[in-house]
Length: 69
Image (cartoon, rainbow, N blue to C red; front, side, top):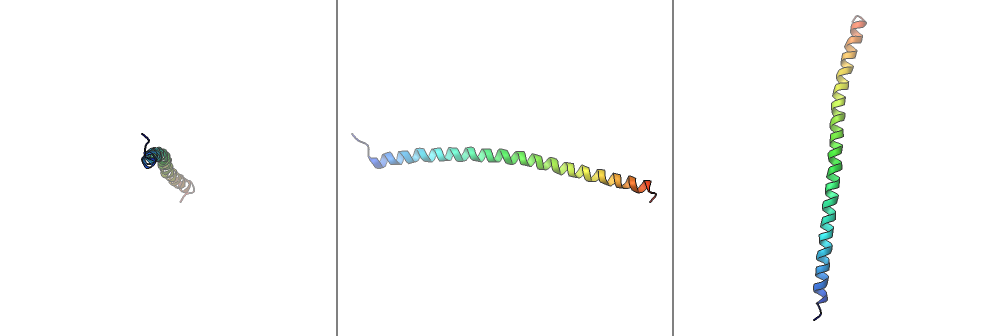
């Protein structure tokens, strides 16, 4: 008994759909991993900016004090 070609095609499409879903999920996980790393970098840069600004303020006060203002 031969299978119906339409049924075979439906099964083939189901398998292709499963593969596409798997690839999308993997791509999504890769993108989220990269975004997580970027967020970590941005947080560190933000913290460094705060500390740098405070150091500049301290240096400016010290310079003003040394100049007698």
